[in-house]
Image 1 (cartoon, rainbow, N blue to C red):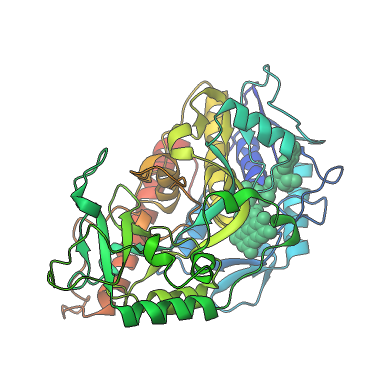
Image 2 (tube, rainbow, N blue to C red):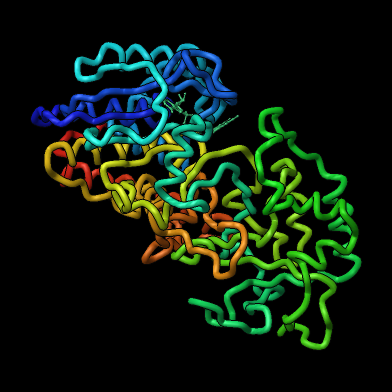
Amino acid sequence: MTTAHPVSEIVHIIGAGLAGSEAAWQAAEAGCCVVLHEMRPARMTEAHRTDRFAELVCSNSFRSDDAVNNAVGLLHAEMRRLHSLIMRAADANQVPAGGALAVDREGFSATVTSALNEHPNVEIRRGEIQGLPPTDWSNVIVATGPLTSAPLADAIRRLTDENALAFFDAIAPIVHKDTIDMSVAWFQSRYDKAGPGGTGADYLNCPMTKEQYDAFVEALLAGEKTDFKDWETNTPYFDGCLPIEVMAERGRETLRHGPMKPVGLTNPHDPKTKPHAIVQLRQDNKLGTLYNMVGFQTKLKHGIQQQIFRTIPGLEKAEFARFGGLHRNTFLNSPKLLDPQLRLRAEPRLRFAGQMTGCEGYVESAGIGLIAGLSAAANARGASLAPPPATTALGALLGHITGGHIETIEPGNRSFQPMNINFGLFPPLAVPPTKKTNGSRLRGNQKTVAKKQAISARALADLDCWISDHLRVPAAA
Ligand SMILES: Cc1cc2nc3c(=O)[nH]c(=O)nc-3n(C[C@H](O)[C@H](O)[C@H](O)COP(=O)(O)OP(=O)(O)OC[C@H]3O[C@@H](n4cnc5c(N)ncnc54)[C@H](O)[C@@H]3O)c2cc1C
């Protein structure tokens, strides 16, 4: 990247994981002096095994590398255009994995570590930051990840509030709205209650007969689950949000008295028949493209989730933007707490990046690190960086974290939960494609494919404009 004018203000980055390493690289390349603080090896997390930067704690895959048809592949492409260190190291250490980008994990982390060690603008300090950073650190990026050490996490929680920092995620599956069969489902809030900010018809409802419900409960009980790691079992998720399969284990009727209760709702497609149980979905993003399955946090394996949830009437053809899950995690209620530049509204010298902001996955964490690094560098120069357009993968993810998600309208478990990049986060196309290049009409799945391809092409074109307008660096091919 072409280096901008040098700046004197130091950018302190806490955590040299996927996000912190990328943020440090971007800020250093932009001419800032960067101090990168990493607690390993003196203090390890429960999942990291080495002292290297950007250690991959589990899978060695960066998922699909298809920038035309897949949202994470598009994110790869955008990050390459912004000269991402994480993408450069991944490309240099690629191992065969079909259409996916998988890496030799040792080589990958070694490449990132040496690039930062050797960068003249980066100073590495090994040591745990055990509370809020000193007040004379005026430009800080906190990128300490899902396993942020306890003293720092406690300090952040005290600075925000009790409910603003979660230590466990409880992820309900999310469905692309345009794949829900509206000849079966219908919009209605229970007892038509409008509630704060609601209309009285805020939920999508899917009705079940007794036979369908019984078969569904059987499938939940039989379905294969993922295990908790030993160190996850003590985390206090049990208080608030039981997985649906655990509720099902407590008795055949438990779900019908919980998230699947059929009361206060009338099916307009068949008003005389009272459903035995009802699955509700609630709008998840302001664009209205994504709906989450209310109360359906689960530890069922992803393949089984798709199989079981597609037996729900109305969801037979559902496409999932996110599957359910429960993990030890550390993440902020970012839509409420962070400004569009990822700064804590209550203390803007602190910027957050990576999984702590509520994104999910290696690539997404690095992507948010990239934007945080560029924004911190702009601030260090006394300027500010406009966020990437919402039509780009980086902008769509950033937008979701800093405001695109819709807060739940009833009390209970916090509704903002970690999210991977997916096409449901992008604004719809002004004119969706209807014809092939030869003029014949697109049919069935061809329309979905063409739509994704048009969203991807729009994203890369808009990113190039943003780069030339705001970063003054030539875009990489
Ligand atoms: C067990 C587990 C398995 C996972 N598996 C996958 C997977 O297969 N695929 C996937 O895409 N994602 C996976 N994830 C999610 C993954 O962790 C994130 O996607 C990604 O690593 C997050 O990047 P990050 O930079 O936010 O955090 P990290 O990469 O975890 O980096 C945070 C860094 O901060 C350091 N740190 C923490 N506290 C302090 C402190 N107080 N002072 C100084 N340094 C500190 C840590 O040592 C670490 O180096 C997994 C997460 C966990 C916990």
